[in-house]
Image (spheres, helix red, strand yellow):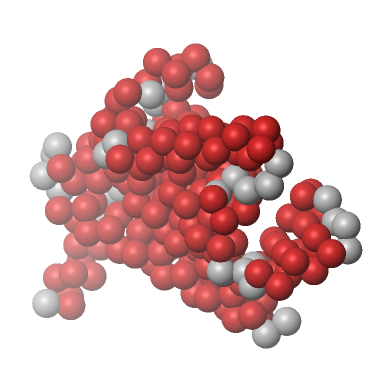
Length: 233
């Protein structure tokens, strides 16, 4: 059995394509994760600051916060409700307008960000809610502005759980990037569809799945190590 498997792997003709697809998957996931963290961190922080528990006591400002929270919450919930494959198709015109194509690595990044940023934003909002209320009270007592409170207190205090949220989002993005191959998004998912599914080559399917599992394990291991380091800082 092992000899047959080793023989099949030696006769496997798609190693160059597998290598290129792995690099494309890593680039796609890395770029999408960068934009997701930037977008989702800001969106999640804004959701937290405008949430009912942290609204201002000033009537006019409070009314504005209510509408901002409702609008952002609605947009986030809508994007999270749409299945990723459908979102990929719906965003094809917008993707072409932004990056000039809906295919390949460039064409996959915008829908990946659109799908993962709302997810990460909700994780950020939940993480910030777990920060002890005494931290915010101390910042208010010292006269800190909202920006100072966020960057000097909230985010540093929540660094470990935020890192865990980034790890979860990165793993979700790896799965999304594989699904993007259905519409020619490139990477390992594209190889699995074109060679593994359409040409009925089980070897390609197994190799791509094994590489995706390995990438997920490495990301999870690295994320857990970083979370442990931040938690004991």
